[in-house]
Length: 417
Image 1 (cartoon, helix red, strand yellow):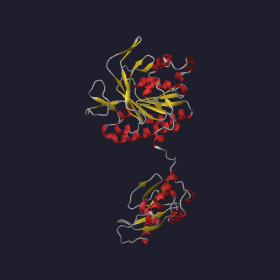
Image 2: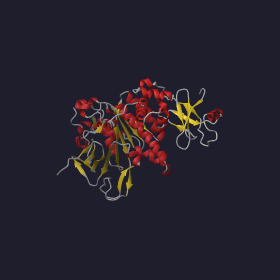
Image 3: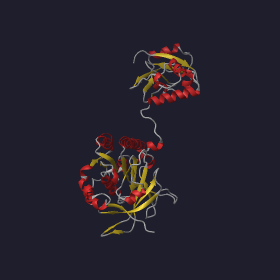
Image 4: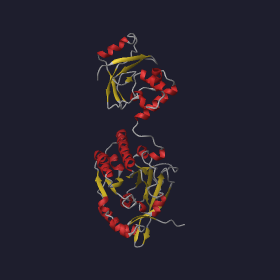
């Protein structure tokens, strides 16, 4: 990478600090090894060039500085004049021959000793360099969580929408967990139809992509829900319902392993979103593959894969203003009575959403659905009672509403005094 020459050696701590000038920037290292900052890769260079450093350091000192070789990786060189800094700071940093990005590879104390700037000037320099290198401007916490708009996606039932203050947020990851048979997939299919309505009826005027990781997609149940839309959505004109081709706007993806799941959310789903064909992503379920593909001893790798998957979902939601609904399994929890997990009708043991804190920290809204004992009736139909519970959400109070699963879909139950 061209000619290498040592720039300067300064003392500090137990070992001198050798700065090595490259074509555009300087890097430093106190001890051998590899340092990967994302901007450059630094490795020890003990070639004959390293011997040149002895001309600038004491050869009898066992703490002789280490010469480094830098491999550039897409480093974008910026001019200091482009930053809003005091001329005094710019002059000081130019005397050190540091680039904008190389400043971020040097610690604040070393940068202060090298440039001769005060602590406040050094902090101002680091802030300006970091601002120039970041890709996106910072957002307030609420905006980064998808609250720049009050737009909500209705779940297709006014009683449940009231619990959720209008429905699912237009941006962010919503988790719906519960035991088998609680009605999670039923509600997810209903939301896949609700998203196709115009915004004045609680939809987003687009289709949905349904990623199935467990059983085959319930096509028959979807067709039954489509036929019952005129009964479920009495607030929508029948002419509008008949004009919508619901089944043509539900895109189905099957993922049998983590590799195909990552491929789906990183390539195929963004293509549908970019074309405006869908505005809802459903994953049923998120825990299936992460539970089956890893042993208990592989928890570190599982968490790494889980965070990668979560980052992809957040990117899709933020980039395309798209709600993401993830169905999750549950696991038994034997805890004390003051557990934050709502207990089911069976009492003990209680259940909690699967995948632990690693996944819980990636979720904006956590909902749980319970299947209770007993029977509720509506006309000629009967159903086991369900309960949709808000576990946590930044904009919702904790609470729940009863519901039932009928031929036309999931309906909330009116609470009697």
